[in-house]
Amino acid sequence: MMREITRAHDVGAAKPQPGGGEGSRELVGGSNGEAPARSGAGGGGADFSGEQPGRRLPHAHLQLPQPDSRWRFLACHPRLWLRVERPIRDVMEPGVYPNLEAAVSAARPGDTILIAAGGTHVACNIQIKKPICIIGGGELPDDTVLTCSRGSDNALEFLSTCKIANLTIRAELGCCLLHRSGRLTIQECLLQCEQNPLDYLSFPIISTAIEYNSFPSLKDQGHGVTVVRTRIEGGAKAVRTNGTLALQHVRAIYSRSSVFFWFEVGEK
Image (cartoon, rainbow, N blue to C red; front, side, top):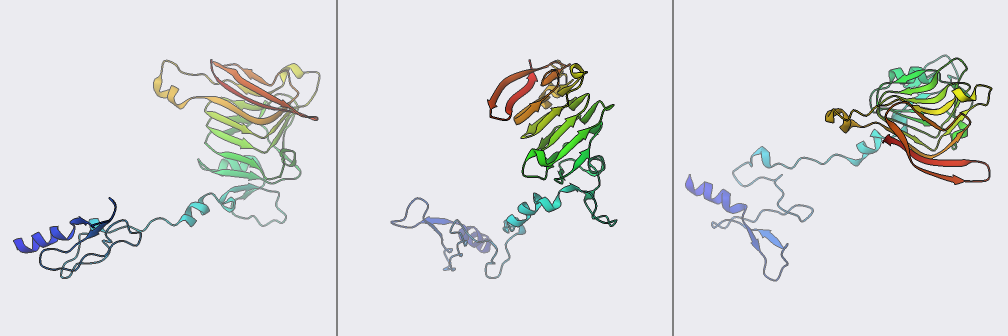
């Protein structure tokens, strides 16, 4: 019995090869002339998927197969996103919704909603309480338009960490985006407040988030708004803050037809 245990320990011993580099090693057999174990396919060590003569290696040493990269591709493939489209026929397809409010209700945390380009989609006082991403399906933000009609406070209200991209959001009166909590990212969008006699009541972005300085656990989550390459038109001013956050790090690039903004709304 002692002899078999000694042989098992000798099989895993590594012996440097003469003339080889520091990484040049070979698994050698035991003192009883056993054949050396085969090195792995990558040349980086022993392949424990084989078996020694007369003995099976413990399952703890078996190499598990690596996950296929195709699964990582499928996890972010647009075909798995929720879609907002006007149905061409009465038959409803799985994952396709007639309006944004229905898609938001059906979405799970981490989902992406793709809004089809063309036409105008109604968005009035839609509350978003889960972390999701909303993307316009057109080549430009002007191709996908969300309209907030008069009488509504806002188009979208965010109470969680979210991202919107490649969208045009228009508000007749009120605000385009109401940020209450979480981290909101607005990337390559167009926010428009239509001109009217009550412009002083219109704001493209309103933030009412409050940082809880006295509660470290809540402060770590953080609240804020990040705006990236976004056009902002109309309203009394671009951002109104009613909480403890303030406008910071403002940059603007002027083109012939519009102005693109980069800025953050964060803790003072």
